[in-house]
Structures are given as C-alpha cells and as structure tokens.
Length: 448
Ligand SMILES: C[S@@+](CC[C@H](N)C(=O)[O-])C[C@H]1O[C@@H](n2cnc3c(N)ncnc32)[C@H](O)[C@@H]1O
Ligand code: SF4
Image (tube, rainbow, N blue to C red; front, side, top):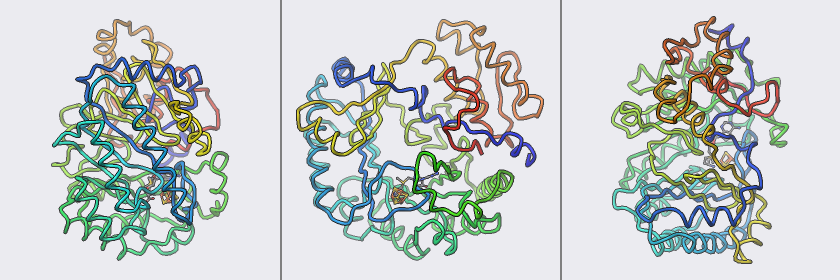
C-alpha cells in the first residue's frame, strides 16, 4: 500500500459537507436562511453548534477559524453578539424546538469564564428545549482548562468533551508551537472523571514535523492509557496557501506521503489491537460508544464536526464562520468578526453564503456520506430511493477504474466497497462522485 500512497498523493476534500464549502455562494443569504428557518416544522429536533473563534496562543499547524487574543474583552463582546444571534435565530423559527445535540467548538471554548458559560447555557434554555438525553459537547484545550471550569461544565449538563492533544512528544510540540506536557492532559482527564464527565474524546494528529512511526505508537499508547471513549486521528492538513501561519512549520521536517501512510496505519492497527472500533477514515471508538453503535446500525453520519452519531434533521450553526445545515441546504455565517457583529447589531442574520441542494446534490451527498461512513454503498438502492438512474454515475464509475485495478475498491452489481486496508483512500473514492471537483485544483489537503 505504501507505493499507492505515493501514487495517489492527491488533494481532495474531507467531505464534511457536499457540496463542499468552496461551492457555497451568496445566492443563499440571510433572507433565504430566514425562510428556511421559518419552514422548519416545530417537531423537528435540532442540533446547535456554537463557534468560539478565539485562542490564547497560535498552534502553527492550526487550520481552524480562530483569532489570538490576550484579553477577555473581545470574548465578552463576542458573547453579547452570540446572544443576539441566538434570539434572532429563535425568532425566525416556529415554536420551541427540541435540542438533542449541542456542541461548543472553536477556537477554544475553554477561554469562556465559567459564569459566562452558565449564562450562555441559560440563554439557550430560554428559547429551546434542551432534551434531558441531549448530548452536550465541548472542545477543550487542556492548557487553559481549570478544575473550576470543569465543575461549571458538569453543572451545565456537559456530558462529552473533545480534548485537543495532537502529540505528546516535546520535539513535535515545539515544532508546532503547542507545549502541552502529558501531565497537563492527564490532570484534566482526572478532573473530568471526578466531576462525572466520562465521555472523553481525544484529537491526535499524524503527519506533523518530527513525527515517526515509533513516536506515533508511543503517542497512541499514552493517549489510550487515559481510556478515551473516542479518538480522532487526523492527518495534518498542510495548506499554507490558505493558512499562511503554517509557513512557520519547517517543511523539511514533515513526513512524506509514504511515511504519513505508515504512521496512520501503525496507529490504526495499534488502536484496533487495543479494542477500539475503526470508524470511517480517521476515528476510533470503544465498542460501547455511540459512534461505534451508529456504525453498527448504519446510522453513522458525517457533518462539519466530522463523524457523528447525530441524526438530527437540522444543524444550526451560530458564531462567526459557523456552518449549518437545513433540509434545503447549507448556510455559512460571515467570518470576519467585525462584519459578523455589524450584521447582528443591525438586526440581520449574519449569513454570508451557502448552497441550496439540488436533487442531484442530495443523491451524491448520500453516496459520498455512505462511502466515508460505511466504506460501502449500494448505488442501485440509493438511486431507487432518489428516483434516479444509475446511469447518472457512469462518469464516476469510470473514474474508479484505476482504484479498482489497484485493489483499493471493488464494484459488484452497483455496490462499491472500499477494502479495509484502503480506508485512508476512501476520500479519493468519494471524490469520484463529486460533480464539482476540478481535477488538479490545489485547494485541499492531502488525501492520506
Ligand atoms: C478546534 S480544535 C480543538 C480544540 C482546541 N482548540 C484545541 O486545540 O485543544 C479542533 C481540532 O482540529 C484539529 N486540527 C487543527 N488544525 C488541523 C490541521 N491543520 N490538520 C488536521 N487537523 C487539524 C486538531 O486536532 C484540533 O484538536
Ligand atoms: S489547534 Fe486549537 S488551540 Fe491551537 S490554535 Fe487551533 S483552535 Fe487554537
């Protein structure tokens, strides 16, 4: 497989949406979004995503939308705007909606003061019914997490956290400007468990400068010693043409395509040996975790946060740059903080762009999602359900020929299966069904 990693060292999207964000246009504006919100039947449960675009130090590898701040005032001001957005959004919707998933991401939501965190949760409860069984998740940077903060999270009903770990090795941490000793992470995990938050996810990266296969295995063992329920093992996306601060990373110290492949596979094998279920192309979960259960019953989904067990019909994104999904399509908020704030202070939703689904988008979206979730898709079944014909995929199936010849996938009777050892290539298989992708466009990160 190593030589295939070199051969197929292509750049393709991660498909956390289809159509992908570069296809979004301003044809979807605040008015359109307002109509979509208004059309959502009040018995449709929703998921809420809040984006906190602030951090106190910059990790050089970071591809998230965030801004470095060293004072609290910009965060306090931002929360006021977020409260306006929450009210305006709720006003556009009919009735009170039930929330079954609530996710705080960033940036670093851990920069919020505990009192502000409580105030935000109360405000959400004013306009939405947070289900007793709701999953309330927060992305957590252990470097600025205190026990007081963990206490506030637990009191606010948080029952899942995703901890940013990346790697434990000192040389790797230095090379990406993220100093986070093992002990710092372990202490936070201890507080979480002490306060009853047992569902702990960890984010790990491979493909960082100075990482080797041996160091990756050590990283995995250290992470597993804290018994996370889930692990995300992301391939470092080096996209300096989009994230210019990544130029601070020494490219000579980055592993090449074949080494990245070996790192990903070594980590995956070790995690499976240690009892984790492999989920899609970059996640692992304990068998009793909801992600593994949704994989088993074929309800695993992919959204802007990656793999998810969240099956809600509507995801409402709040905050600068946040992306949401309604039955009609995707919407993305304005990213620059000033413009985002100005829109909301003027009483307008802060929608910048989006994509309205065509029937063909809906069909291809499902094909791509099933490939990336199940590593398998039955095109005949899907076409029948969407009132389409498999002939719509003639070009896509032809594009699979080289992958079939190399044993990466097989196609029998309209069913495509990605070989287990070829999971890291699944994005390439999915890309064959992307009607918008321009071959050779240097827009995305490496496939593996
Ligand atoms: C918003 S951050 C997590 C929370 C918090 N900011 C932290 O870093 O601890 C989400 C995750 O995205 C991943 N990430 C960030 N930049 C990345 C990149 N260039 N390639 C792949 N993954 C990346 C990291 O694993 C990170 O933990
Ligand atoms: S990885 Fe997390 S902490 Fe680091 S800059 Fe990005 S969002 Fe901030």
